[in-house]
Image (cartoon, rainbow over all chains, first blue to last red; front, side, top):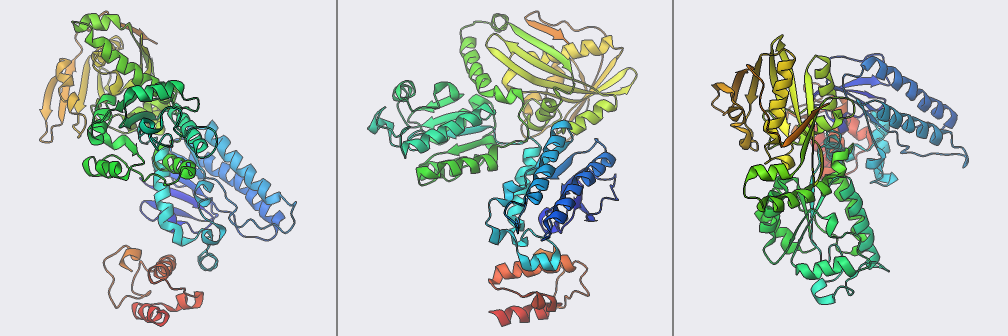
Length: 530
Length: 64
């Protein structure tokens, strides 16, 4: 990926040289077209004349607007907010500079809100980690025009890497939590339901605030799971009866409360949730348990746990900053806890039926198939970034990429799935690239793993094939590209009746099929094409 | 110096004149890295003097 950086100071030590091209200092005359994205990283200059400085900062806004207009909306444009790293005020009530910085930053936030391709990065998120003395290195500022201390370059690179993941909507999916001395103070089995430290004064208060923060995180779509050596009945009693308890049974998607070793438990949690071990973060106050997970399951992220309860909120912030923040949360994310729990119920239901068909009938499955539009575009892009298992080609697209393909005449459908246990939301998508008037190629086909196991993938693809036939298409081409995770889809197109034309040594397969007639779709799928 | 200039091609003969990667920007990164690595403070004038490998070594030795 290549980037062009608009800047007014030396920022090369921070953003690096790989794939980066830099504007002249404060130079907006050149907006090159041959890059993948633009970055705007201005810093507040040093100037004791506050009126003049405020005027200069105010002019950045117009400069930025000008650059945005000539850059167009086809490529991502990332804007750093301004931070007053040298907040010099000769007169206490002179707020000219503060006001101009605030006005610039709120303008940037508004731009990001109004335009899909514009994203803003809160630079103070980085600067507030340091005191004034280490943030600026005056010697280097005067020698090389960078107010931000070059000694922070490595820190900055780490922070920036995480922010880029955040902008690409990549984050960990599940937080696995211990209970005793982790979600509350004390040991439930020894101190009893009312003896554990939760609520009231310190230290109970620290655990309450920590639980409240975790609750908010789960409402942003992070799955919470419990992995604790305890008696489940005791824990249920604590959930029911302890008045200080914020996080209760229903806030957790899955539980492992038993005396089995935690590595086995975590492995089971991953398979029950149908997510990879590399999307889990394991939080436990016991260093021995943490070490066990690090040894046995190196893919799982295991942060150190704070020694003192009063450090919990700082620990929470570092968890969020390092693993869980994403730029934008979709409705599907917010409903995730509920969906994963409903899934567990569906598994239980399945066991009671003797044949699959009557089970599927009982589910009242409703499939809505919709063309891509501005509302579902962020979710479609997010699915291409996150879906690994049922994903035939694993091509990752940003929102801008998807929009670009729509502009080029591609057809993109997504699918929303409901059943009587709940609404799974948008959980599948297909990208169709027209080859000629009668031929179309499937560029991308994926379904979220939480709706698999009900034949929905076949119903979805058959419906799309029927739509294509009605649109006049007579041939479909498709590829299967193997990855470490998508083995279950290796013969999907064979099952759909397509013919494998060529197979590569790496397992890649190319398929073709004539659309001779309409596909019949089982009547337990209630399908609506919107 | 190899890390800063991102090239293995740094020898004891290297100087600002014969090493294309050794531009003014990388020179400051080098100064900043040397300060960290040897726990020393370099004055702007001293940084300006370190124009080749030998002078860099001599400067560090004088600080230790």
